[in-house]
Image (cartoon, rainbow, N blue to C red):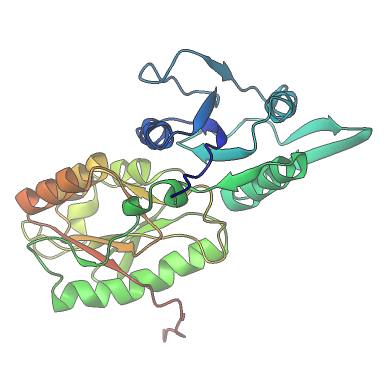
Length: 284
């Protein structure tokens, strides 16, 4: 049987655990991997032979790697948004500009266009490690209650609306009230409501409310897939929520055995499901 030829990848790595997982998977199947670190990321668990990307050298670096025969790119990990409003660069004889004043999805699509124009094939994390998104159904001992399911119906509408507006990928709902939506990161959102969350119920000692995490409608799934890991589970448990809903096939679960163990120990549910993206007309 003929084996597939090794591919030559450029791993563009941001913060978090995912870059290491992707690197190890690519290497384990025999692919060659170059590493470039995004601003704000440090990876002492990756080989030291890497380059740091800056806004003023990203195009030059990409062209350099393409000239070395690198054909494939995977972008993974968290990154801080630059303070400036645009990035100017020269491609050939043409002066170009990336506008970074919009939502994350619109900005990332501009970067993907530049990367593809140089001649790279872009891979998503889910294409490298499919098992990270291959989940469906209730994953925990606890299942959502009828009250949770009512919150989930509303949550699906909220996360669809903020996704269509390119605002964020997550929201917190309790008693059919939207408590918070993600505008920066999910962990930041959860931390920001810890002092008030228990006030949105008549019984602060009873678990209730849900976190929903989903991709944005029409999102390019090769970058910025929503991600859940142990840190998020810890926050959901500590807030006193009932559980969380994640979009099946479109949310990365890091360290699934640990996530499920923490959820079961904390008494919350995790429900992986397809989302109803139909937004109802709500009566006043």
